[in-house]
Image (cartoon, rainbow, N blue to C red):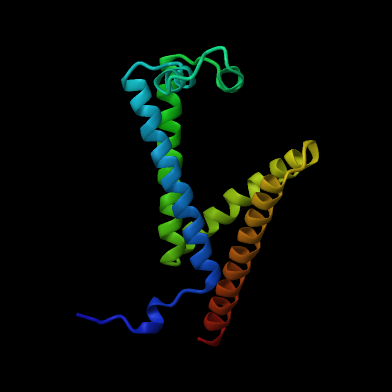
Length: 166
């Protein structure tokens, strides 16, 4: 059985950060999918109202009105679709995290294309209303695209050089 050398386990900081970001995001989405699935299973189509009632918050309070206004009632079919969507998106994010960690080329290409595809939408959102959160997410996604595109370019150049020397 072949032992892994310490340098085999070393990962560039960019790979570590992308893996961490995608892993955390995938985990959050998975938890959200489970919570929405439980709400669906329990036939709770008005989650905000249910939570506020469970916390015994006065329905005439400002907090109640604010939160209820944020998330209107949705039907059980919408909860089902939302849970499935969140679950699938979580799986994609976790696969991306795994693939970047193990330097799978197809995942890196997919991640560059996926992240780059959303950059124009993020720019539009930034022009509508600038916030530190939106700006931070845009910068993170832009850095991911630049880093992975650069890594892909270097791998392609090295492979090209290797093939020419043969």
